[in-house]
Image (tube, rainbow, N blue to C red; front, top):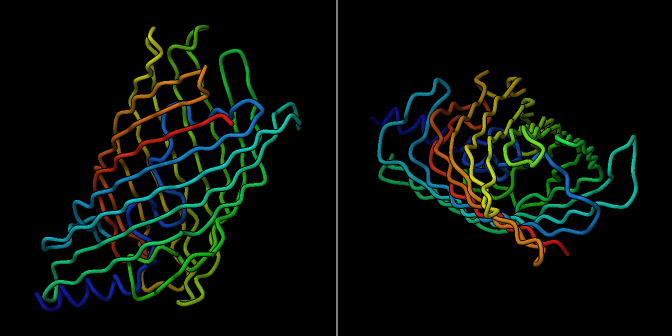
Length: 302
């Protein structure tokens, strides 16, 4: 048991110090988007708030095996996103830009070596996205975007609950929505992100590239309420350079979402629940969590 505890703590100390929860091995928080997420809005200024609560059920190692003991944790996040879709077009697409400022409160309780508690809170790394392109057809939408998560937050290599990651991430986005009928009551959507990371200065490790997909199948009722099945899948495609292992992280979840749009108020509210059914750690993290995620999403048309 002492050997297992030592390995567990060593893996945490060498981890990416951004929570295993919410991301696979980069910056983007899985599960924050859902139904019709790959549809860029029309020209205008928008504010979107994401309120997230994540409960850790267990920690997994690089093989997907559960680490023994009563290990738990929570991640609470409030992310502020600002989107400006201009009246300009490029290649037939509406052009826009965005910025995201996340606030994080992270706690991990580990039942090893007599019990260990790690926590941190504050402003996380900030995203600046100078490129959003949105194409719109009669029964389809396609979105392409590009941005960078800057290493702006506080980072502690010895704290796995640190709100900062200690490296930057360039994020490339491609997604689409297909409506099965002219009334657009039924739809299927997929929003993919490709992440390219810089070196983590404190450890000299460069996390491998990763690919993430959020998907949804939705139906809008006659009263305007939208219901649907949602999920996410994420894979680390390359092993971390300079890490002690060549393990690659994965995360998989499925859930349900409901939402409603108030056109006269310029307001949209969505709520979703995701259950992670599979997770595997990569080299930089050493350990990965799986759990349950609850998300509220508020969009205000300014």
